[in-house]
Length: 418
Ligand SMILES: NC(=O)c1ccc[n+]([C@@H]2O[C@H](COP(=O)([O-])OP(=O)(O)OC[C@H]3O[C@@H](n4cnc5c(N)ncnc54)[C@H](O)[C@@H]3O)[C@@H](O)[C@H]2O)c1
View 1 (cartoon, rainbow, N blue to C red):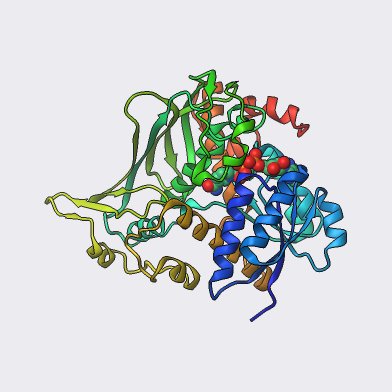
View 2 (cartoon, protein in one colour):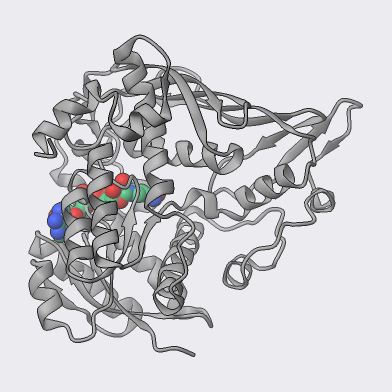
């Protein structure tokens, strides 16, 4: 087996802690190909805490840094970085890590704007290092199975997808920066996961008509520990109320390059009954996908009333097969459901991303979610914003090239990207 890749976690907030749990999962498996040798955060306390946590989990305390350049100078043989800084800093942090010569796994969204994405992609090209984006939802075995069902023609040809989530009220989602246009609006920060699922299931989006709204201008902290409780230790520092500037709801009609259609609603200020469904319609039937990280079974329905929502679904997806590592972590090559809690599922999916990065370092292979794929997901989200501003449908090409950028321009100016 090749030597383990020496890696640093850069960004020791909530997601940094979750990525550490991913490394713990990988370390307990037979496939460990990574050694955590350093942690880095502008906030020394966060980095020291994560190093302590790593010692408890992995048995070795990584070195602690506040400055990535110093880290690269002082840690011999450091090869890779796991960039889990907040979204508004990715264009600086990931660019710097790549320029410092580190293969980089960057959390989603790749950057806060399209120009930010371009900056990181250019750094990857300059340095010749791997840039992989930590898009975890598509790695969920159940999403792999939906994709195989679609590719194998289980419901005929793809026709139409509805991706809908309505929830949120006036809750403050995890951190204040997720509610500010200039630091990472919810609809981008969380919405990009769904953009990626849309492209993962249906291929490249081409044309988008969208509307975006800011419904809840005041957000109230409910003092939760965030997903999996990972943010609990910071809860006391979160203000009770914040003023939001970033849009919290978006609605769209999408035409994909292959001519199929989609309707997308991602509403984080919904009151009353929450709603969530992902329905895929084909020329012969439908698939109700259960969503992400819950392991629930898929339901497939045909016109004669046949409903398949158990193991028989595998007969319709002959091409479905997880990678050897995913198969070990999820208990089989072809799981049709699983029964892990959120924290366990989360760390398994993150372990798969970390494993893949190290494999790319060893073999030179291209990661599944590279800069171009991740940028397209960001472009799909911003297509809704730019369409709203322009008052017309926009093409993904216009968004990706920056030909329409009226919404993002203010952010780019703030980030000094124009
Ligand atoms: N994939 C998922 O399911 C998922 C879930 C949550 C968050 N995320 C993503 O993870 C990223 C981090 O989110 P979070 O919730 O952990 O944020 P956070 O605010 O909890 O933590 C960010 C940390 O990064 C540090 N930081 C900022 N700039 C830095 C720099 N240049 N160098 C070193 N450290 C720096 C901050 O001091 C802080 O400790 C975001 O991009 C977010 O979208 C992904």
